Image 1 (tube, one colour):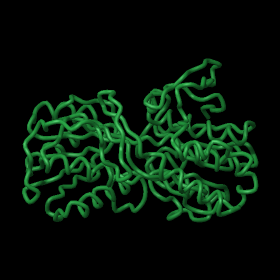
Image 2 (cartoon, rainbow, N blue to C red):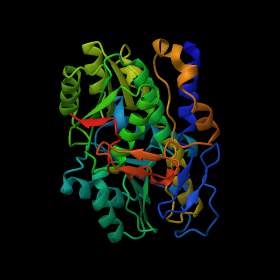
Image 3 (cartoon, rainbow, N blue to C red):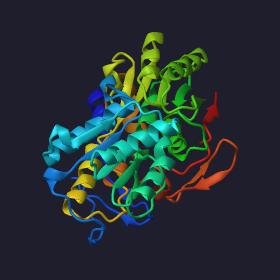
Image 4 (cartoon, one colour):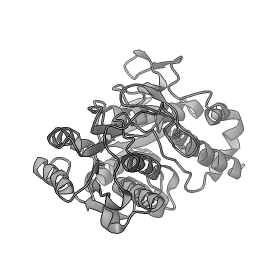
Length: 380
């Protein structure tokens, strides 16, 4: 039974991010290898010889941290580099660029252009408006902004992953593990941010599916990267009696605080078991190399069409679920439908009740737009 839930979580999470849509709202599909299968179109920009290519990347922190958001994105860049056979000199990294510092952001983006980058990836939400401005100033350079929603359909696109199934499944793990029926969630932003809120809601739906008595208590840091604040938020939730701590923030601090307190954790971005092996139930993880390879290949081939919004990645199980498995066959009845693609967490047919008593119906493509909390969520 232990192996059953571990295998299901790993297998379904791996499949959960392989569907996509374009930034312009057009439906797309992906192959198992992650290739965009939208109708072929002539590229908006000429092909770039691989040996002449330079790729810029702007990160909010330093990949050397070894876990978390930036680390995972940089693993994706490394994967792309290996897949396409690029030299180290062809990757231009700008690390530790605070996404609240306009001067630093503009400087980093302009330096990438000046150093000859034909495409620049800006990986943090807070870069969005500045990337939009720079893209207007440099119409012959391609810019891709991670996690945002803006695009000009030409040389400026956005990208993110459809991670709702993985969030839902991690909620199942949390809902089955809690004994206090109090689950904490450290969130970078409040419900004005659809990316974070949609993740919380999918997680909370997973919790409710196996444990309708449990509640999810959200603590907002107000910052995408705040190591101290993330740790303090986790401590506060633990003090409230939360015995599982989930997160949508950049560092492993919520997981490490959970381990110190003897409670459990659900990680994000990378495998938090690296930093909190005794606490981590599972981690919702990304493989950004699928997207980065696809995007850069389009630059090399001259097939960039300005519409690429790639929902790609993977999520994996990390750690033991041994105490959860006795209930698995009876409780997790929708897993087969998730695996087969018959059912999405936001499937367009179900009405969802928020914590204010209002009802909402969401389609799968609306994931990432929620500005309301699910009915079992409270702001701590």
